[in-house]
Image (tube, rainbow, N blue to C red; front, side, top):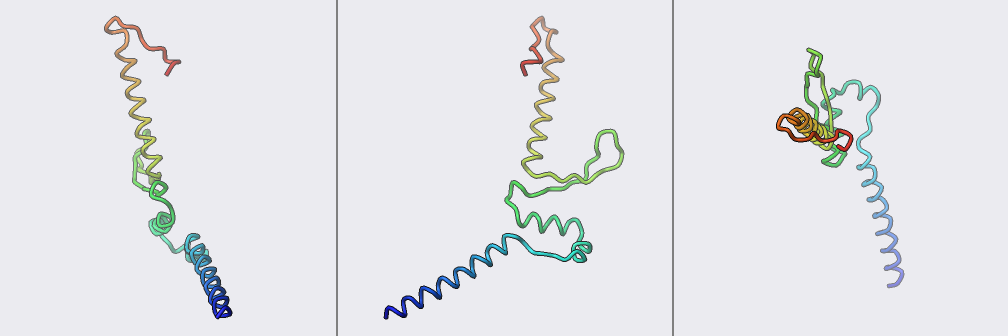
Amino acid sequence: MRMRLVLLGLVVAAFSGCASQATQDARLGPTFSAAEKELMTDDEKLAIYNAQVRDDDKLECEMVTIAGSHRPQKVCQTRREREWNRDSAHEALRDSRRFQRCGMDGGACPDPNRL
């Protein structure tokens, strides 16, 4: 009886070791040869990358016309980067409007060094 329990314990340990290795390999993602990578489109590579990362780290790409250029460019950013850029732009616009209005109504302008 005791021998069966020891044998059962060894079998369970062996299978759990194999399962953890398979889980670890799955987290690393699929591996592709250089030739396979060359044949993939950017959208396919992006989908493979996004399948392996957390939601906040997933890349979202869009065609954007950069200021001073007439050619649209593909810009890829994470959701976190996109939110930070949007918030920074709103803050810069809000600050510029505040400085445009200061002094017009007789009030003092805020010190730009204190922002």
